[in-house]
Length: 111
Ligand code: HEC
Image (cartoon, rainbow, N blue to C red; front, side, top):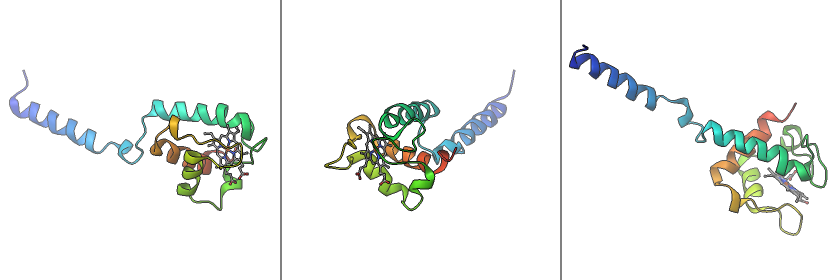
């Protein structure tokens, strides 16, 4: 039977594990990130092409977006581009989601 001290140490280790969680820097849960990745490939892909290299909408792979900062891209995703088919996604996602997608486009799409 562990002593109270041992339980205390286990408790502190548990707290340290939670507070040191690297997910703190990346606010989305892995399951939400998976959903967003699917959304990008399917929904965004329906206009931007399955491989995102352009279709009705322009190429949105990292190469094509490299001049843009993530915040600008996130705003385009949230509000769309008025007067063009690019729709606003704000009703379907949070600002954190849009930022995640912007970073995803900038980092993960040169494949
Ligand atoms: C209904 C078609 C359609 C869908 C769906 C769509 N887009 Fe677009 N998107 C466009 C069009 C068209 C443009 C070009 C707008 C313009 O002329 O400036 C565009 C522009 C963009 C741009 C700016 C590109 C640049 O070089 O300035 C980004 C980023 C973008 N879309 C991301 C997304 C993401 C992410 C999704 C999915 C969440 C998405 N789009 C879904 C049609 C679409």
